[in-house]
Length: 482
Image 1 (spheres, rainbow, N blue to C red):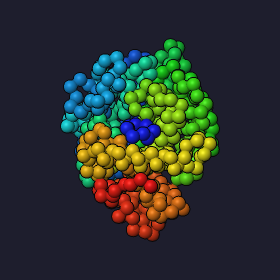
Image 2: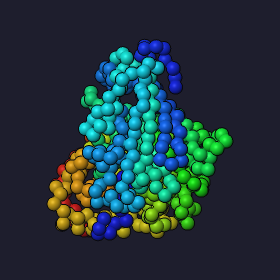
Image 3: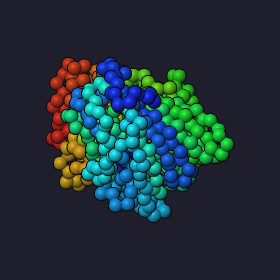
Image 4: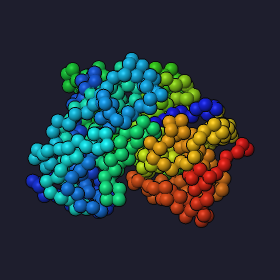
């Protein structure tokens, strides 16, 4: 959840019968694959059939699969609202309304099965398998479901003519320490954690509408409807937006950069920011591994939101903040997208790094008129004022539900950026940027832990940095004005 910090002092393969199929133990070949056929009515309802070719890449034997049903958080009576109470009026300008997801049927290898809705907030789908699958084996699961959009300016919703489909399909829970992670949809941050998979997604909409999707897409007209055939490999999520968009395009080092917009009077500047930042981060951290990158201007409560190969920026931002949101979300294509992490328990790993990388982009791209010195001075001053008035323990490495809404922004974005700046000053520019490029390559398409990140820096820099990182993470480091 991207709260733009312009710092001021306030802030389908078919398988035989029931036999599991072995998948290669090569990391590049053991991915699962989602094939989704979705039909959107142009209003608030989407019908979808999903086939998951699941590969058990864990080390445990499985007899059932757990799926997150994130849209269930928008239903009436949900225990965990995706919107913090203090933002309700902004999220629902027309009044609070509700959405939901209904599972119509599940099948395993084509055989209809019972299923269970469980979880702390009735947001977990459990599908029993017909036969246990060992590590390295596969199973095919089919899920048919109906999604209803709430009238909300958020990840999954419909407002002002734009439908946003983020976190919109049943996605398999990550297996951690032999158990499925079934964390609910907290209102703080980005409460998501997923493994990479391959995607083939077909979205049919009324032909008057335009679809902006993750991955590469081809539009095929069919009378009153149009279908977008999209594909994406090695991605940890898939999202799309539907509306009456205009499109601006650029090419950056062979990557098609697309900007879908409706209101942006400086759309040339926004698509340029997307292309420039994509090129800059590719040179710094390693090549962007996809053929397209899409930015969508949409009604959104916060500044923006990242998905693999697709970023959303709010249509309520001015010119400079729209560019800043675009740059920040583009940084997330590396920190969250290419290198994943548990965003529920270690949000600083992607948010703090993406925020600091936004500053780095400005530092080395002077044409944007924003300086490293000014941004870091603002971040430092804002964090000092926050520390003076906050009762927080200053700890950064904790679950999203353990942050107060106010604390989350300062401790993950601001303090995270200050921490990475301190590390950079401790090791020097060459070692710092080399560490990030090694980290990006070493954990490409994987989920990294805090120890993975810290040990990569220590190995590359040949320096014990535990004191620097832990001082910030544990709330022991005091921050002073320069």
